[in-house]
Length: 436
Image (cartoon, rainbow, N blue to C red; front, top):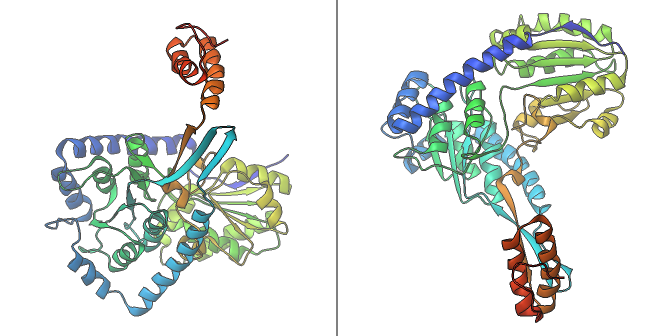
């Protein structure tokens, strides 16, 4: 097996140093928010966003004013995208059914899918206003039936971004805050004098937002670790370098630390792509950001076979994996670790980011090994229940339970079973002994 790197990114040690710096900043910031509440949040908003309104919570009149600034065409596009996303989320929700079944005569077991009671949806808006993130989080939570949906996004040029507010409002947000970054995450999770804490945080963000969610996990639930965007193109010689380079840079422009990786079995395609990326960076308006990501986090990996390409792709477990080969469905069947797949040259990651209907909040930093992306099911908790409806079942199950508890040395547990064997089965079981 021969795997060759024609281009590599930052060494792992350097990336670890970056992560350590982020961790320290986030830890101190969250402690400050917990200690000082609104005062700390306001100072952070002033420092990072130069924004300090009388209230970060938008009133109904402020929401209406923001909506009035959205053009008819933009509003129609937002509504079209939300229709696609809502349709797929409703199909997913319908696939999750409550269950009740008699598993043994007189024994009823079941589960119910219950919405999380309050969710904080973060919508990034640093370099770019991520309007689509509102659809992916707020709207999906609404389909799941979450009764309190809190949405937050930073100000843009000193005011709420109209299209983000429109997407949040139309998606079903109950509270909209003009608040960004770590301060938004901390405020929603920890609560302040004016912001009630939520039970769960969702949404993508930069390294600081992702780290804040990681540190708060356990105190609140989170969707997943959705950090800086990652993309991988898995391609053979059935496509050309223009498609590949365009798809790599289309995601690299997200931020200075967005990995973009080509995995191919064609050295010609690999070298052509390197050259094409260099040419496109001369004309791409977002080249300042994209070139930093490509320089420090871009990789080009050449393999000898499709099996090697598959192995590399699964090992990297990228957030977005674009497959453009002569055997796309083979990769669909064989891949097991990724955020989302984009199969064939006719689709692309931007479709998934903005409009096609699947969710764009996806696992990064290899989290695709153990979790999928945000979907309607993330907002639902599956809770089981049981009941016994006959005396005979209470006695029979109780006898088994009594003996199994005593096997483990749990006498108090056994007595929970024994008292029911006595009461419903009419047997005289000595206290603290197994129901033989």
